[in-house]
Each structure stands twice: as structure tokens, then as C-alpha cells.
Length: 154
Image 1 (spheres, rainbow, N blue to C red):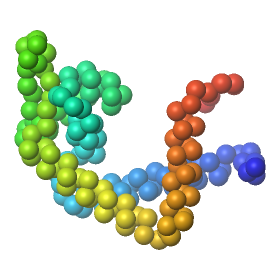
Image 2 (image 1 turned 60 degrees about the horizontal axis):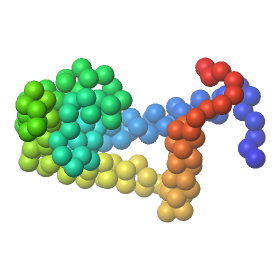
Image 3 (image 1 turned 90 degrees about the vertical axis):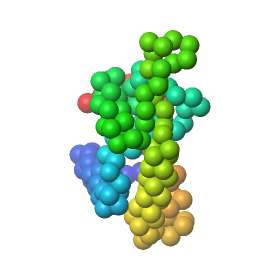
């Protein structure tokens, strides 16, 4: 059982620390100069998980953003040659988004940069500490995904 945190100070501190770790990772990626924003990176990673080119609406749903946000991201990635819009073979009025070779190369660079950033960030931790941290973060993610019952949330 954990000690109570009646004022929520520990919870606030933990959330502040997780945001700082995220900013450190973002800074590491920016230093690599890949020319891809974090939002574009997320779209590229999401796009890579589809077996065939998805529609913009599919991407918006998967990313949990409004379709207009996906349009803006795709516009930027298309301008840099990382994705292209292609007509759906079954319905030419439907546009699908596919990765280009430049997009796949950018994804490889992003993955390598993310791994390098993770290694630098986690360097002070021993393997056992990394495992414990992973378990704790999984517990938080699983808890956040579970439906909440009870009193109102703030």
C-alpha cells in the first residue's frame, strides 16, 4: 500500500517529471535536425502501421484528432516528399495517404533518433531500474485506459 498524498503534491511532481522527460526527448530529436515535427513524426509512425494506404479520416480517428489537423500534417509531409495522396482504386473520389521512399527513410532515421534519445535519457538507470520503470509506466497507461467508476473527475 502506498502512503497517502492528500494534497496531490507527489502526483503533481510526478506529472511534472514526466513532462520534463518528454521535453528532453523532444530536444534530443530536434538536435538531430530531421526536419519533422513531433506531430508529423507521430503521423508517419501511424501511417507505417497500416497494411494499405489509409484514408485521412482513418488517420484522424487513429490519431484522435480532427480531420483538419491531419490535412495540415499531410500537406507538410507531402511538400517534403515523405507522403503522397493517391486515389482509392475502388472509389476515385476517396483519397488515401501513402508513405514514399523518403518517408520510409525518414521513419528509419526517426526510429534511430528515438532509440538514441531513449538510451541517453535512461543511461543513469540500471537494467533492473528500467524494468521497474517500465512496469510502473505500463500500470499508469493501463489504469488510464480503464473505464473509471465512482465520483466525478476534475
